[in-house]
Image 1 (cartoon, helix red, strand yellow):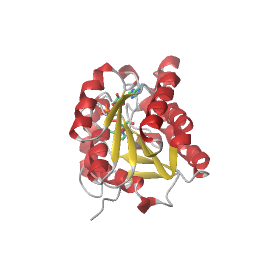
Image 2 (cartoon, rainbow, N blue to C red):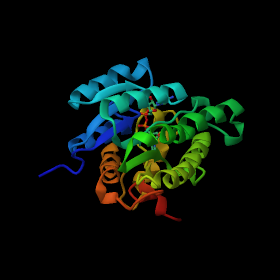
Image 3 (cartoon, rainbow, N blue to C red):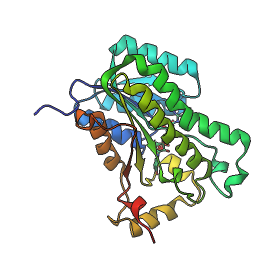
Length: 256
Ligand code: NAD
């Protein structure tokens, strides 16, 4: 039986290690037939990303630090020369200083705010603009977000504000890229134990709360997110754009 993503080329950004949500997404897309290019932020994550690219067969491992417009432009140049056209972009990355992810939100510094919003939200805008010319019609862009964008979640602080900006950017980019038949969506994942999540003070309390109160009475795994990423990458979601799709065992719908 042909794979759902046969013939599609996906760029997956945000693999740091085997626990990363991007790792599960890359494996899921590969499992459904996509050809992959993985990106790494810097030397710290290069080996891990190269290892995963080897494991997934023909995958490329390319450098891209989203804080730099030059780095994004170099990524585009390599993708264009290797593939001419790409079909899927997965933005699975974020950053805020650890000290901004604890205590009072209004203690956020001007510089901490700027860095969190730049890396975690503006990066999607820059990537969409730079890569738009090489994304094929029918293509799909997706970004990872979290409930802290619409609720005040303890200690999530400036990252919640960055995710609100990211979700709004998804809607605006969906309008811009819709003209060329490309969809842009966000996946709002429930809490998953990864390096970034552990930087949020009291993260394990959030996991406990979700397991108790979510309609499905469990936490989600990165594989749950990977499966929805396959749907969003595929033609099955051809009329879905500008949306935030919750993959959170239903936690976000529960009231008192
Ligand atoms: P992770 O630490 O495994 O991944 C974060 C990635 O961001 C890393 O690969 C890191 O290299 C990358 N990154 C940071 N700064 C970068 C830069 N300047 N340029 C390029 N890449 C950079 O953590 P994760 O939990 O897999 O996070 C992936 C995404 O999922 C993030 O957007 C995160 O906010 C989101 N998310 C995570 C959870 C969770 O509970 N883990 C829940 C909802 C959403």
